Image (cartoon, rainbow, N blue to C red; front, side, top):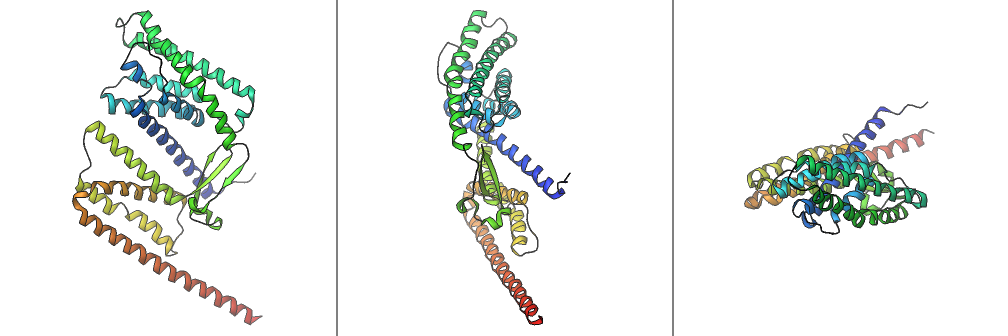
Length: 353
């Protein structure tokens, strides 16, 4: 039995951790941002207890992502997404709805998406059946939680009709009909054939330097991205989402002084990682590229808070770009010297023959 090299095994673990964190962030951020405009799963029940049938965009998005990500992401990310939304927009916590969303995500995610699953009509039928059963279970949990958390506040008839039955109808409109269609389209779009999409405008590196990239799986389609640039984009999005939540929850904004300090020190790890690689002193890893890129992305967003110190911000940028050009220059010179030495050795070998 072949053993997996320790370095490769460590890289696989790091990639798995990174991808799971990325999935969690994507689900939570998507839920909160969509819910800001369309209301969260709990909004229709907390802000209006009357019987109203309305399409819930947030419920559809969360259900679809839970099927793709699986039960544990549905459980954990659903709980924290609803909790964060409540803190930011209700300024009050309704823990029963955090639990309801978490249980919904877990049950929906149990029938997790697998490539080519929805090419089979029988499995499409099973998916619809699972969505129907889950909807009835969540309906029962909503009724039970209303009785437990708000005893004697509403009549049993009102709880069954205006909470439980309202969710069931909502589920038919937002989940049972639409989700199977979305899954079929996703499966046919990304799983029909096994593909590897490697485009220079995504990777910035030729295939010979593919160790500078990482890939995301969509069905049976692998799409490759530049590790450091991906880290920059993700870092910027995480920083943007984090500062938005801080502003909404605490009604506070990052001070210009702290922002200036952060944008001065945050690029240092990236210059160490990229610079030592450019000078051929070491070879950076995918993890280090993602991590240092993430820091740069966060710093680029934080830069928007340094408006009071525009001159110092520009000065810091000039210094860092100067260092960047110097590293490129000396790295290129070293590459040329090593290449020339290699050529001289080859000529010497030919002369000795």
